[in-house]
Image (cartoon, rainbow, N blue to C red; front, top):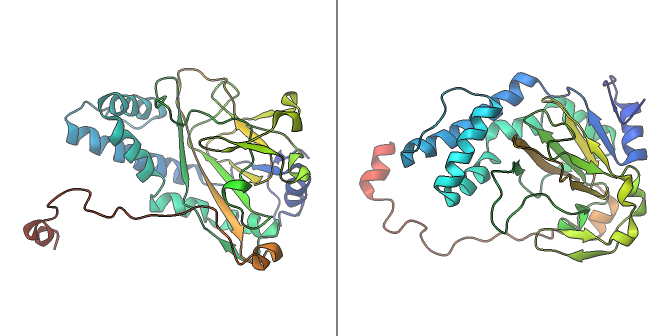
Length: 281
């Protein structure tokens, strides 16, 4: 059985593969109609902004029309485009996907007895037409653990909203690389990039997935985004499950490497008025 297979009832075989390889691709673990509903809600957020800005938008829901609308928003108002992606990652329906019974069952099978969430989901939208200046468009080889620094058994979940083949900026990873622990790295703007002397660049394998699949990956697995891409849209999200009962996490007083801040003034001056508040009720 490969690290990508049908699902057994108790996940024992899959959990063993995950521990050995540092990842597991759970084929069709998620209900496809539920994944597509989340994608439709993401599209709705895009269309609402296009309509507000007086920009054209497509009427039907598909990867192609979503891509077209994202490009229109990207070219029309980059700030709003980025705000939409941020809000897409906060949809309640997205959280429901990540906490569906089968996902929780699998995380328990790999040893996460007390799941906790210290971060929110992260949105990954990639295409040749959506390259944000000085922004994210694929990351070099890295491990996720340094950006969290929590439990040693932290797992990253990677969820596609379109079918991803090897020519659509697939996730690439090195099987078994988690066993090397924390590798030497250099701090880049977005990541802790692993020193190239500590991995074989030919060892990366592309992760080809379909809507309904979900990738479970150790936070110590070396991975990156492939540079092999075409004009299509690759849309995915990722989230981290941490284990509140991991012994080292307990001994280190539950550390968290990220900080949150609050804007110290009103984002929109003189908003809201009393009348605007009253109109809601």
